[in-house]
Length: 398
Ligand SMILES: Cc1ncc(COP(=O)(O)O)c(C=O)c1O
Image (cartoon, rainbow, N blue to C red; front, side):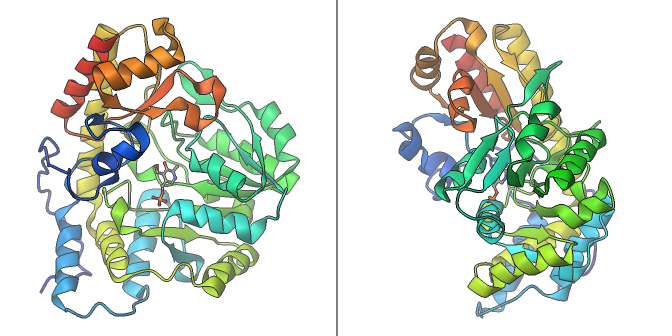
C-alpha cells in the first residue's frame, strides 16, 4: 500500500499542455459562466483556478481513502499537520507548531470569520485596491467600514502609498493583505512588509496575511511570509495558506490558518471551534496532506509552465496589441490588463471582449470600483494553445 509518510521524488514529467474537457463537471469556470456573463459560450479566462490536471499524488491519495468505504466523521491527524508544518518550513522558513494551525474551509470564509471574531459593526477594515473582490464584499456585507488605500503603479508594478496607508491604518482594526497581491501578481518584498508591520503594530491593526498565491511565486522572485518579517509580527498576524491555487484543488476546500500568537489564536480558533464552522472533511484533509507532502516536484514544473505562459502573454500583447498595458505578474497566473489606452470607453471595451472576442475576463470594476473600469484580469492558468487562441481573439477584437 502507498505509504502516505513517504516523500516521493519521482521527477516525473507532467504535461501541462493537455487540454481537458471541463464542461459538464459543475465547474465554476465553464458551467457557472452564464450567471455572471449571461452565456456559457465564451472562452473562460476568468475565475482563478487552472485548467491543469490536479496532481496524480493527490488523486491517488483520495482514491486510496475512498477504498476504505467509510466516509464518516473525521479530524485533522498528526500526519496532516506534519505535512503542513513541513511545507511551511521547507519553503518559507516558517516554524509553525501543530497547535498554531487550524483547518479552514476556504480563505474567503476564513476572512469572514476573522471579521466576526475581531471586529464589530462600523469598525474600520483596511484594504489596498485594486484587490481580490471578496476583500471588498465581506467587510461591506458585515457592515464594517471599508477603508481603501489605492495602490500606485511604479515601473509597471504595484507599490504601496505608505503615507496614505499609515493615515488610514490609524482608524482600522484589521488589514486584509493579499501577499502576494491579486490582481497584478505583485510579490511584496521584505521591506514593504516590514513597513506594513511597523505601521500596523503602531496603529493597533491586526494583519490578515492571505498567502494563497505564495506557492506560485515565479522563478526569480521570493515570497516572504508575513510572520517572518520581525519577531513582533508573529504577535500581530493571522496567516492563511492553502494548497488550492497551488495544486489546482480549489474544489476540495482545504485551507489553513496559522496563528503563532496565543491571544489571537484563542480568539480565532475559539470562534471556529465554538461555532463549529471549520471541522473539515475526509477529502479536504487527505488532499491537503498529499499535496503538501509530495508536491515539490509538481510545483516546480507548474511554475515553469506558468512562467512560460507569462512570457508568451507579454510577448504576444507587445507584438499584436501594443495599445494595452499588461502588468507582468511576479506570482500566480493572473494578468491585470489596462485596456483604456486602446481609446475605447469602458462599455465598448467590455462589448468587444464579450461579444466580439467572446472571452470571459474578470472586470476590473469589481476589484475596487469606478477607477478600475477599463481594466480586466486575464487568467493564464491553462494550456498554452488555449491561451494563444484567447489572445488571438482579443487582439482581433481590438
Ligand atoms: C487573494 C485570494 N484569497 C483567497 C482566494 C480564494 O480562497 P478560497 O478558495 O480558499 O476561499 C483567492 C482566489 O482567487 C484569492 O485570490
